[in-house]
Image (cartoon, rainbow, N blue to C red):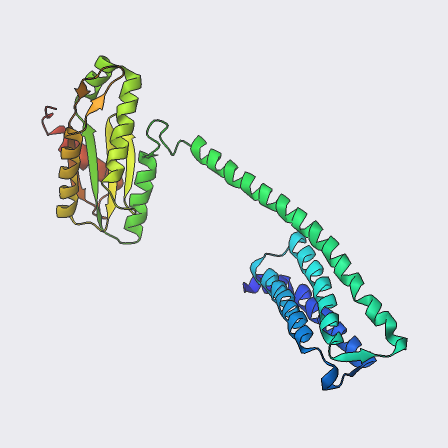
Length: 299
């Protein structure tokens, strides 16, 4: 259990213990033990099991939930239910005099109160979950409003990639960076239109994601360039991934609009090891320079 939760919910823990101790005290002080032959052992097992479950629910609620109104209502309602269950269980092993008939009447009242309180708690819990869901949705929209995700490809953008490289270096982990450039993409846009160009970028984005592992990162750098982060990858392995990407794009048959003739494109790639003594800007400059010194390849 979280120590902070335990400290802030000590009153609930103490109240729960006191409530069940009160039920035990009432039975011990007003009843006498039944002879063994009068005890219905099947009822003892059945009502004892219910009592164990009720007490375990109280423990689970205290351990798993943070302090607050919902938690308090849950614990109060469960304690009322457990109080009645405790009296029912002890009834199987204790008998009471006629002067203690009020104790038998007391059994049904806490359970009814507990059901009402728990209904309030569950209603409040529902409202709590709705509020949490709205916060998550708001966080998601805020995240997207900060332009961390590219609207066309739904990949992260370059700033996010730079941040992850910085994190990698702070943890002194190795890896490689891989940049992909689509050859003659401006001409593709002229020939087929920007809408088809965006659709082609989406196809390339999906293809790149298919070539990486779960912990790798694919981002859209800008325009017709993508950038990838391959943690814990040797330069030889990263170059092999780059070659596979080049071959895959070369064989990608893209059909534009109503045109049944497939369009084929090609890409150039640049790969370098991440060296933490170089800044992210120097790393990007190296990748751009490597691409710019490669001649465009024919599709």
